[in-house]
Length: 367
Image 1: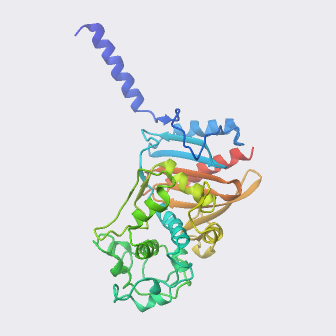
Image 2: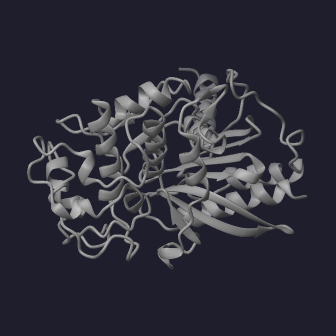
């Protein structure tokens, strides 16, 4: 090898090492999304300098675990940026934000006539010949109790020793029979307690009434109409999907589901979810959550609720939240959706970072 070629190769190696050591921001031209045309931030009503400053900040994060940001306003894509080798078609575990998607799917099941309304008791929704050991306590628990995390079941994600906590059943090949044996620890509606069992039971009810896994129900009834082609949702050997999380989606498809919520269950000209149910999903707000999450003021229908001041205005929004900083924010009054994906699992800073990004986006809208 000549000295010239060796020097050239060393320079090339140095350039490659330099590139891989920097956070990568990708926002190049992509294939258009037919139902969600792109629009510039300025034309969408955002201050372009503020958005540019946000993009610069995101590209310089010291932690290389922020993956994607998609902002959609008035059914138009305003921002779609990816970071740290993450791309549009990459799917990612949104963790407990999947609970909020399960709540959305219940609205679809009601629209399909599989379930009447959220006031039905859980006991009546499972056939006794199939589940002869269902606990009598389920006669007291309504769907709305599950949706608002006030079921009273003896389960608590922060207390693994409780019989209904996920560590006792998540690894089972069949978990519904076990879940239906979990008794009450208190009266339904009495206290807010975060527990995966609530969302998984919602998913199990959809499965029981539809005759298919929650994963397949989601694909046929929602994901196909929204052109969500790549996804993964953990499903056990008995074909029962974990409705509390472990749903893998791309950031853009995550945002699409937020648009469906913002549009009250309507996609294009087709109503996918029950409109009355969706109105309740958008507005249900119980303060029973207390100080469990400092970023939230309330909780309802498996979605967090907040009202904060941005610029000169107070803005109300609902949001799905998953470990690692995976947030899906819906701002109904602005017809806006903000989807953020991150793999900073087990870190609280990921959630405060998501709030920082949210505040920058909403402040840019107010300029």
